[in-house]
Image 1: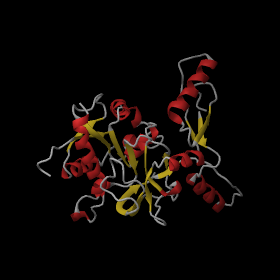
Image 2: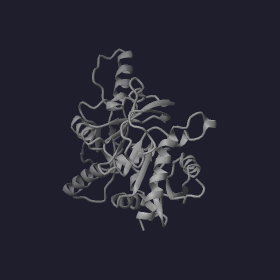
Image 3: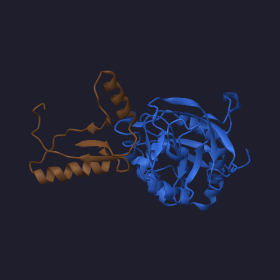
Image 4: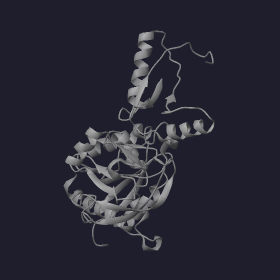
Length: 80
Length: 235
């Protein structure tokens, strides 16, 4: 699950990161800092898994006033 | 003061709360009987006339400030208490919890400066007609300390316009004194019914002249007055 600040929302953390990247010589703009949450699910059903992940984002992981989210499925416990 | 009944004010305590004792002491000083209530309780004490959610760092501020505390068992009791018209005050982390719980509008975000701020701030009273502000005078300035890293209140344009129209902005940082980048200088908001109020400044740290400021007593004293009145009304 990827949670990130919505466009237009002030992201002071992103600004600080952008400033540091510029100090290192990278030509970047509009850095935004979000959050990745990985979980392992009991279900093998991709549709069910996706539905569960979306509910997790809606109920806890993202605050809809300021954050958007996306979910993706992968193989469990492979270290990536 | 001693002759008047002391209304019971429940102070919710979450793992990581750290201003619960100060809040309880201030409420006692102002004529209430404060009782600290651990977050795993499923009910408020019998006779609770008001609830305070104190400052601190509940659940280590993990994820977002207040985002996890809102699932504590006591929150269900506080939610139904508020739904019945009960008075609920959230201070700092308590304010964050109430916004995350959907009991107050908006959200508290990291300070625009990314720095923790700890200082006295002047606050303009926008509403003097609430149970939390009856001892305040509208338009007057209170000086109360803030101490937070995540006090930047935010609401989108549409929500903000609605709140301004409904006069739900209760306290504003005085011009030029916004410590955290909050939109519209908002320091405290109430719900539509006016029985739930949250603010970032700490009135419980400003009730004793020995500590340099007493303006916090205007807020907490108002709450105690209202709680005393509500005891007769609520069974």
